[in-house]
Amino acid sequence: MGKTGRPLKFKTSKELQAAIDEYFEGCGDKLVTDDEGNAVTDKSGNPVFIPNPPTIAGLALALGFEDRQSIYDYKDRPEFSCVIKKAITRIEEYAEQHLYIGRATGAIFWLKNHKWTDKTEIEAKVGTYSLFEEAVKEKAKKYDTVKRSKKTVKKQSRRIS
Image 1 (cartoon, helix red, strand yellow):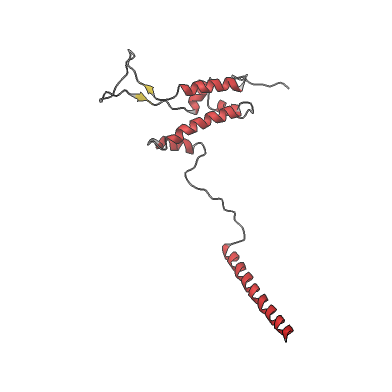
Image 2: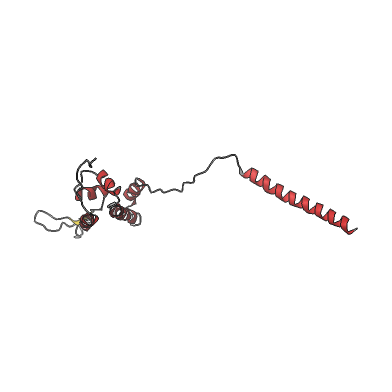
């Protein structure tokens, strides 16, 4: 049975990597210009920039996809998996860096939605064994060892006599 569905936009991982690299080259803060192409400045005369961060949706659009899901579909294909994973990691890196430069709220939100966590989760297995039982067993071992050593001393003293 033949394959069904739309043909792939990218035939090779190198072709996909080139398109991804082009997307990331276009990311970064963009200078705001007026209609004549002159830089817009703030009250202090500094040029105004608008952020243009790398995003999954932006990457999807740059690659010619209709939605983000197409990126994840490509990630599931062995020949493209590493390329897509690296691209997503670059976007994660951008969000992670913003945790350190004061624009953390959006970064935290993004990271949490991509399986990062800000708390330690401990998985506890429930069973019939408790710490109390463990302590009792330890005491019993000590008592048993003391009891055995007294018997050994009595047996040895009888042999000597």
